[in-house]
Amino acid sequence: MPGEPDPRVKAGLERQLEEWRRLQGEGARRLGWKIGFNAPKARAALGLDAPVIGYLTSATEITDGGSHSLAGARKPLVEVEVAIELRRDVGADAEVDEALAAIESLGPAVELIDMPGMPEDLEDALAGNVFHRGVAFGPHRQDAAVGGIVATIAVSGEERESAAAEVDLADTIRLVADLLAICGERLQAGDRIIAGTLTPPVPVSAGDEVRAELGPLGSVELSLTG
Image (cartoon, rainbow, N blue to C red; front, side):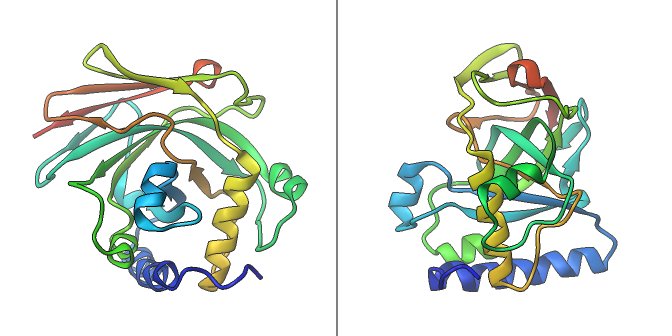
């Protein structure tokens, strides 16, 4: 089992997973997990030693090429991310080779968050699913790798951010598995993990068309309405 976590993280995750179970009880499908606060600057501001996680369900899935209403959003932002799909379960304290062997495929993803500013209360931010609002997945590939890939995100045809797609796939999977184990849950075959933003989050507004590209991994698009 992983060591004792930050008590704020444990308490926030327990509250978060209560809501996750409630949503599934009402018919939402389990999709997977998201990495939150993967940027070192954000972690430093929150006193975190490692990123945290949130959940993904069908309740917030946006079809590739589909639309999403920003009604009620205070500061909507989009993030380009690598999505990892798993072919097998992964438990706590997994070895690097075990985590890598669990990967079924990789693909592009866009996460939409609503984050007015850095949270004052980390536990509440976790309980609120780390500002998650929506996720769109592009096509996945079984023969893909992330080495040398450049991630870009464009809004209404204008490139806004670009960066190397630097993702440690094994560490990402192991982090999620360890945090879930603390709360009595487990990474499962078929789960997808969006591995954290690759560029600074990009502000968006109603009427924008968003396109994220990850080189040979492909692209994903969505439009935003009021």
